[in-house]
Length: 163
Picture (cartoon, rainbow, N blue to C red):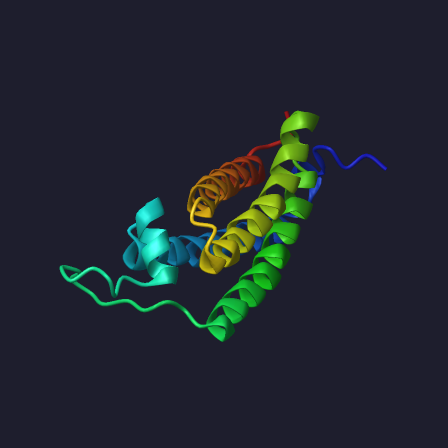
């Protein structure tokens, strides 16, 4: 079965459904990134402070305490489950686009790997592996870039006629 480029031949109502889904998904994804920016300053030290606390810093503007094990397990559990579903659905849509096979494979698999590295990394950071904050930052950035590129490709091809 040939699915490469199938996006061009989908009925108009399915293209509209996919387009609206991608827009709504993007709103949710980027509002989550805004939250990350507000809570961790989107840098490695901010990430460390968000999960390990800053009670040792007397000059801190906002006092933060180390997350409990229950909070960490809840965060990891909910994010891994929800984001794996999000990226699986996005990968299914990417699979019917018309792009190079290597790029398509990367965009389909990378975000799922980054979900494990990002949220597993947060858990390991919480357990004391401080250097994991760099893995979390890198994998989170790569996940976001993959998401953006996938969304742009999908929306562009939804709007194009078959080449």
